[in-house]
Length: 350
Ligand SMILES: Nc1nc2c(ncn2[C@@H]2O[C@H](COP(=O)(O)OP(=O)(O)O)[C@@H](O)[C@H]2O)c(=O)[nH]1
Ligand SMILES: [Mg+2]
Ligand SMILES: [Zn+2]
Image 1 (tube, rainbow, N blue to C red):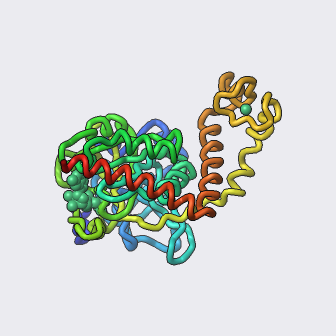
Image 2 (cartoon, protein in one colour):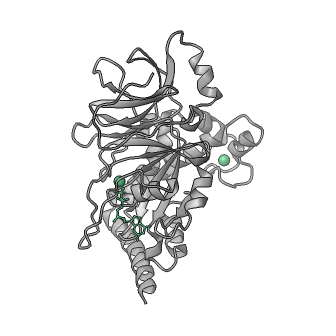
Image 3 (cartoon, rainbow, N blue to C red):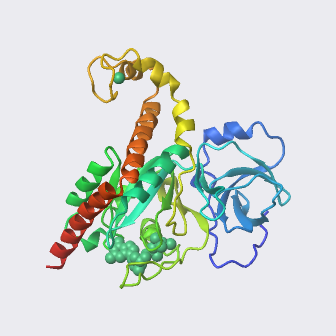
């Protein structure tokens, strides 16, 4: 059954199959707990209505304040034009709403959070760190995407400089205009859901179009004077790309509040604290120190590597909080990176 949807600026795609939407055994197993209805994925959310794709087609459902809040990427059970149930989420990306201070849902069931930074402007460390924390907190992996790489002569220095500030973070450089890095990125996203975040004008929708090989998302010109983008993407929307990759485009986000409370998260790592008592060094960083009990626990399967990564992230977040408390140090780091990017842009123009 496919009902006509209400007028909307973006034409929803017709989806060939549930697999193309990210359906897997995991969701099939979750669905078994529900009797009636068929599965669907929320592919668009514009505040007042959600668009849900099922095997039968794509249609609008009103947002009811009484029902649980839905996010793009959610798997739901629908029947007779009603959302009956929400399948338990594998991950949930949210931010602190700058206007209300409450939590705002950005996307659900995402594997990777692509943090898009345009190389036509300085990379803001604080924002990058907050997005990275949000990604880990969501239960997803952050991936820094340096876009507009065609505007600089080489991205190696910029990547190195970023790695010093954000050790261990995954970085890819792409240029949508020349398709550089686009296939590499597409390969990383096969059978996964990737949400693109970052400020307006960073190049998210252009990248979506490059990955899709056609115009799916509306893009906007950046004002030359201040490299500020206009908000051309107005809703969060999921697109099914080749290789069963689902990509969620979002409107620009300048302010990102970390939703998690560091102390609360910290309290959730008592298993690591307990193991750390057995480490040879009292200040062990559980990275590559000899006699590390935490690493031993990972090696023999008592502890998941992902947990250590999350813990590690928390420590970095604390370090970042210290950096934030020291505005001079932050300005120095920002100026260093800005200089590296400027040099690369200048070298390109020569
Ligand atoms: N030179 C260059 N410009 C780009 C690239 N990607 C995006 N842009 C430009 O950046 C501007 C903003 O892009 P858009 O995709 O709308 O940004 P969004 O707000 O993050 O979705 C547009 O003028 C694009 O043409 C790129 O790879 N190279
Ligand atoms: Mg956009
Ligand atoms: Zn250790």
